[in-house]
Every structure is written in structure tokens, then in C-alpha cells.
Image 1 (cartoon, helix red, strand yellow):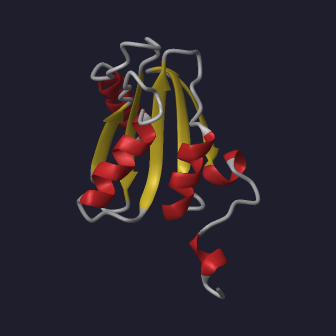
Image 2 (tube, helix red, strand yellow):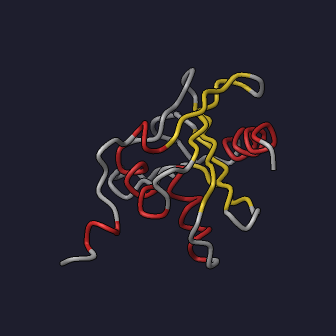
Image 3 (cartoon, rainbow, N blue to C red):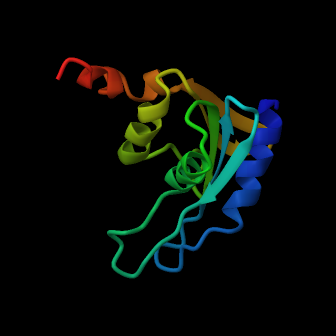
Length: 131
């Protein structure tokens, strides 16, 4: 799958967002190593604490279906470029240190980063191997 298709899927996923409180909608599209795409949107709750970001929704869907290795994720929010929050970056890191993270402004404008650029000196599963 090419990046443009992944970007379009993230934009479509944003339309399903449930953000009645912040009004800040986010969609994501996660590409598994298998080639399958998992979409997600943010889901807010009145108490805010249990709110889940679009990125974690997509990752949770993928993991619950058996996918554990990911190539890329596209993220599209209501701001010009909506970057994943720190919690989402750490969740992504659980599964891939070198995943591509594409932040979307529009269908034709986006920035591509590696997860390592966005979360340098990260802590991951391999850090627990000698515990």
C-alpha cells in the first residue's frame, strides 16, 4: 500500500470520531507488516480520563486481531499537523522502533517521520529482557 492510500484512510477514519467535548477529531490508519490496514478514531468520554486516541484505537484493533508488527501509521487531526501524543508514541514503540509516522495536513500534504525521531532514547520490550 502506498502512503497516499494510507493518508486517505486516516482522513476517512477522522469522520467517525466521537469528540463531543473537545470537538477535536482525529483519525488514523495503521499499516501492518501483513499489508492489512486498521483504522481508528478518537473516542471521548465525559470524564476525559478513559478517552482513547485514534492511534491507540487502531493499534488495539490490530493487536486484538493478531497483528503485532507495523510498518506505518498515518494520523489526521483538526490542527494543521496533529502529532501523536506521548502515550500513543509509547504504545507504538511497544511494537516497532522504526515505524513510519505520517502526520497529515491534507490529502496532498503530509510529513513523514520515523518513530525514533519522535521518541528518541525510548524504552521498549528489549529493555526488560535482563530483568
